[in-house]
Length: 98
Image (cartoon, rainbow, N blue to C red; front, side, top):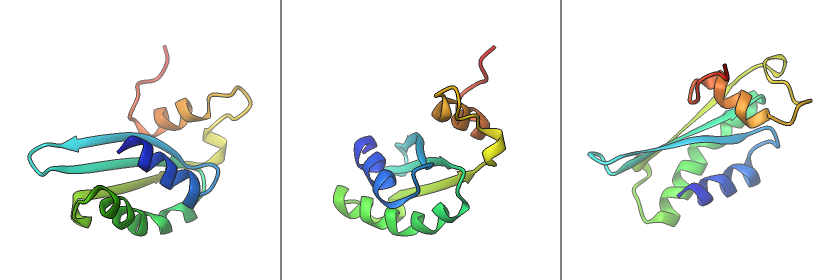
């Protein structure tokens, strides 16, 4: 699931989009896929990617939920090579480094 989601994001969203987290909900047999980006237009791809991922995995489209969170470019410092960490931190899926 993770590799399929990563490849889907890399090939269909902007270069700034990153897979942040995947949560499996056992009671619903469903996946929540969280994506972080600095490009608001990346949200347009989410519905189509949900259907594509579900089809490849043999699931119903309702079993895949892709949430695209957008942060401002100024909030993410690209100069230090930690874009993914800062993006995940801003979205709240990882705690800040102390």
